[in-house]
Length: 211
Ligand code: GRF
Image (cartoon, rainbow, N blue to C red):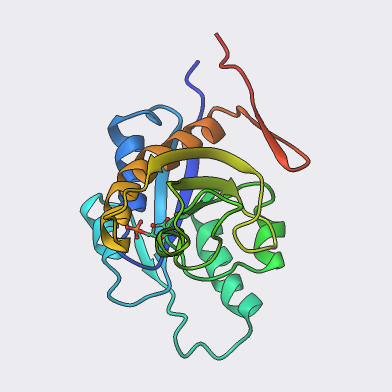
């Protein structure tokens, strides 16, 4: 029996290279047969992620946050409404530069993933790669985690590491980091779509694949 595909909604604010990695993985790679990206939403006008979605024939929706008059929850209600219209079951925050509200998280309970450009719990916040360089760490990387009400905080699903060289700048580290991010996010999405993730307190148990 062919099981139904998990419907994935992506929310992004910028270039969307992680969004595209997930789209491609669904189309041809590891998530094939498990998940399907059904919509991409951006809060930023002219964000390149919108174009990337269009290129993949995925509906691209702009819900602009700039000059939005209501509360964070009011804004999230619009986003949730759009995601529900597409029956989204898994939400991927792929370079989404806003915090989601408790309302959002209640709606998509244990079904919102985020990618962060550092090895959490080190260097949460907007500039993971830069903060790692400034601190002088020798190992950096990226983290995919479930989203909870605190920023860059929820249970960790996948982490990948890379060496920081003395000569590295934010740009060079980001360049190598993004390559890892593009592996890590589809991997986490695949595990979710295969129903292999179990949250136990702060920890995520990765269950064995059904034979
Ligand atoms: C990535 O480094 C991601 O970890 C961070 O924002 C960046 C987004 O890049 N949250 P892109 O838009 O996916 O290319």
